[in-house]
Length: 571
Image 1 (cartoon, one colour):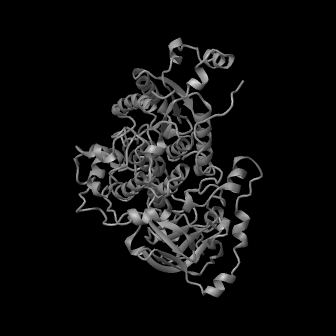
Image 2 (tube, rainbow, N blue to C red):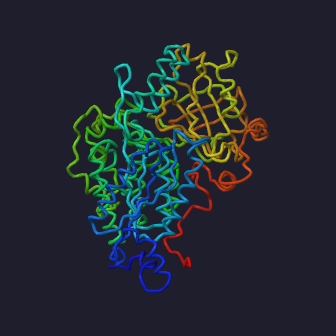
Image 3 (cartoon, rainbow, N blue to C red):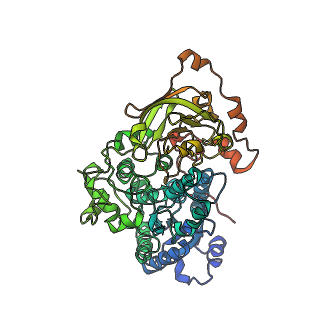
């Protein structure tokens, strides 16, 4: 067996090894340091991350599994980011959380790690940090909540917030009734029950090979989640014994498999920036264009909100992730392995679909072409993305006059002005919401529609933004426009009245302005006034170093890996 990394701290009889052992002897017996693998449980449980609040219970089952396999479990609380709670946006801290996780894994005497996450940014941050330190690692996803109901119908958390709030603004739902739905929306522990970012990244962690096969998508209150957590603890010891590391599991083939799954599942557009960032930590050659080349023609098979009708516990009872992957098995790289050491495709042998309404046959998809489309043009020289499965088909080719908002505050101040010059054919343009400009690339691209249009029955319009949108959201939204306005991108040049041309079939996003006039036009000074200018702290470091959406919005000094080696003693 290979030498234990933790032995660098604990082996020997000198003063330093004495210190390392002695301060850990708070219930640990002497044989805890005889070469047993020490497994950290990187735990993102927090009362302020509601979707992860149950992870302490999950951690206990993981610890039991580690004990059973002969390892030493060690609870390691790490930075937790509550998508629904933190301001200005959780994305601002994804890179900081990844950096802190990496440093704590490297600094401590551990031989492997179980990564506990659920809420949107926690699994990406955990995978980014683990990829950079490259110790044996496995993800234990916290799982989705159960479906709540309101007025006798199921509620999709996130998606139905957008729908119900627009009904209030349209005058078709009373404010008191809207507030009454709050207690129905979040029925149980767990993350969003729609195919939002949390569900997407939990499922894609398994497709990347980083979970115990079959665990992703298990509802958070389901007792089988704790059974899987116990088995994950056992597996973590096996990983440490085999020295199987994330760099051996998450290969280019694994990422291409994730792109196929993203399309078949109808997953969140946020997966684009997260997968690119994780790949960047590993040095895997993955580009934004791979999402289009690999996923654009993959059919949408899962009928879940926001692109469909059902919710995550329906997907689980219908056969789960493996049943979906079995339908597209021929599109998957058979060489891509999982943390078990076996290929992902080897685990799909007995997968069955139990409800063909929820998981459609490959020959009868919800949509034949469901992947992320990457657009280019004079508005997006480095690209922008759109999710056709969540868009209105008639708007995927559209030409209309821009109605421009220079900041989110400008949008909120003017959107419902009865004198706003806007029609259903207009294109709403919001800028200053990219990684540098906001800062942190918030989920605001799915702008609410003007009240006067809602009153006319309009429920979708073309919207263009350099920010992100929630994976639970829907609509014809072009987002992740790169470069962003605050980084000198041409979105800063758009003026109200410019004709905007969206042509998803031909992958174009353009302002129909004469080339000479466009080249000579100055960026909006009003937009520039709203860009973030932090003076200190993480926000300052982030704004100074963050990259653009087309490369994953990671900080330039965090891309790549530093490994697990610590060169100097602490005493």
